[in-house]
Length: 324
Image 1: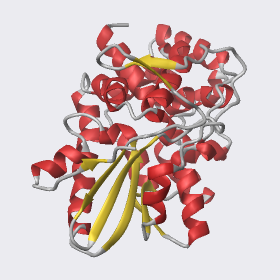
Image 2: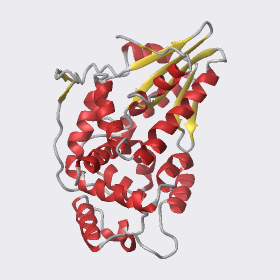
Image 3: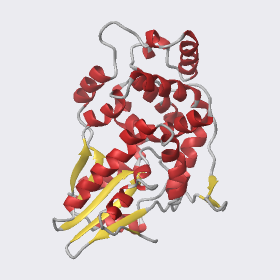
């Protein structure tokens, strides 16, 4: 696998937990049985300094933009976390407590709606199979990857390439100890309900699944094979993603997710750049109304030159990182 493809695959692993969270309850993701790469506890900043993650006191990045009657907090999330990580305190909890509304990427629909969307966009219904889109070598590689996770090729064969890639990439999460129910969105939504806050989504489930299902089939197959080839790195990728998020290391987040996707411009445009601009549109419009809003989206969207903050800055809106 070339360096470019490997970086894109690692980026894909970094994003996949978001899409795994809603579909994990549909019974489509097998419980992995095989051993995977172990966790790492620390990483390096751009300057080479190692920053350990204190699991009892994580400090994920938080930003703020405000005028005389409106405050919008921007919080980068990790969509699946280990339950022992303590992060919802200090400046994050204070900002959240003072907000009237929680806005996240997507409000999960009911199970029937999810099954209908996946059945339409992720499963072959015309009698064809995934194997028919693969070379003999690709099929063998995919079958071996699936078997290592307890997912038979027969099950994968019903899936379109993008959904098979999501399934393979998401399967290791549970074994490695990451739980969407402990992810930032789930925790924030639970707290918002307890406090009687309004909860809204920037996108629909159909839209999020469509980001993958509308990719050209050739690109979907490439991502599927990359995902299968990157399974051995899953432990390292998820652990470093959690570390970077927990210490507020935005440069590492950019490196893990965005840099790899920039090697595939079409995918980067669909999954990162285009969405960031649409969300910046929403934030800019929302600033015209009074109130306090807590916006929580995937940390990769708040990192790099195409981040939501960068787009807002282009439009004359000042976004400041909260130091705590």
